[in-house]
Length: 508
Ligand SMILES: Nc1ncnc2c1ncn2[C@@H]1O[C@H](COP(=O)(O)OP(=O)(O)OP(=O)(O)O)[C@@H](O)[C@H]1O
Ligand SMILES: [Mg+2]
Image (cartoon, rainbow, N blue to C red; front, side, top):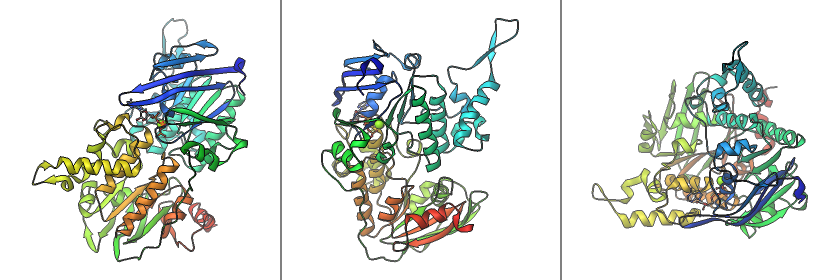
């Protein structure tokens, strides 16, 4: 630790201001060769901003960056790459119309010298083989490497981003929330990569809100709060609770258990939802006052089920009833009209208008609430609503007029959440609502979910975090290979029996 002769990166006294915000003030960070350093902090603490200076996307207003002992000006992403810095970004950064292979090698295509000539041409075979080799470590099937990545799901896109970052010959890999969309199996593969990189003398900077992941993975943990360094600890000297206390400056408990709310009549019923090769005869229901969980491994059909319910994907059969009335749902708009709102998994593409401001995003899906007469928006009501949600969810933004684009990753998600809560539907469907959200805000979101059902709504909750499901749900359906294989009440549900059914273990 602190052996500066071995430092690959030394950032000192870094300050960065944006209009209305001091994102970083006098921040220092150093990383040695072969060392894995974690960077943790609440949403908006400044983690991604600090990393973007190493990736060449932002430039410090003050402070110095040294790479390999030499002062460095990282003017642009290309320069970062030349210096040996590779980044897995928090935001999707792939070109949707290109394949995985093309994305991985974008801008640095492998060339092959033709015999006897000076002309070089792209060595497509080599690129394909190399991509497949890396990709196969995450997924046993590799047929996806040639289709446009826009046609693949969020999870696969994430894996391709990781493959891309790992395929670059480098001395530092920055991972900004790399496990956000990953299933347990892929997480393990990624952790193995971190160990492998370290053993090759490559440095790793690792950002996550899943604090549990850090133990056994990193050598040092740097904690940031409000754009400043607040602590630096070895993983052996602390635990999750200790990190949280340093991040937020107070102690909090992680999960709430929902209070028992009297359960009313059936608010959502789904009968016989099927889609060839994806979903098989999925039936479920949610009562008023109930939070119903949907558990399962990645690929089990949870996201596909909720997408089918709201008409985002076509189905070959199935009916949806809201409050006893049969609904014809062909598009998500129909679903909203029927009283079903959904917070999608792949938010960047579906959930938010990043070029618009916070206020508009919150009120957009329910304009009628802020309308006076036909078309006149009641400014006061709109502003009041936006401010109220920003405050309740603790969205870190200078004003409600800030473009959503410039908020931190987690704060963008809070805005989308606010938007759906404000549509006041009868049924809310949440697909991984707390991914990328810090502990403090998670707590707040659990409370909002609990309040929603207390007021008579029903919630269908997809979550890969079992403690979250067990803490919140009154009932849990477990999916495996496109089918619901069991249903547990709160009293019956345990991590063990859910995992058993989710993995198909009950069949053997
Ligand atoms: N381009 C920008 N314009 C204006 N403000 C910005 C911009 N980029 C970042 N910020 C602000 O800088 C602060 C730090 O944001 P940053 O994205 O670094 O947070 P983070 O720690 O990565 O949070 P998260 O865990 O939510 O990803 C936030 O207040 C954010 O709104
Ligand atoms: Mg971030």
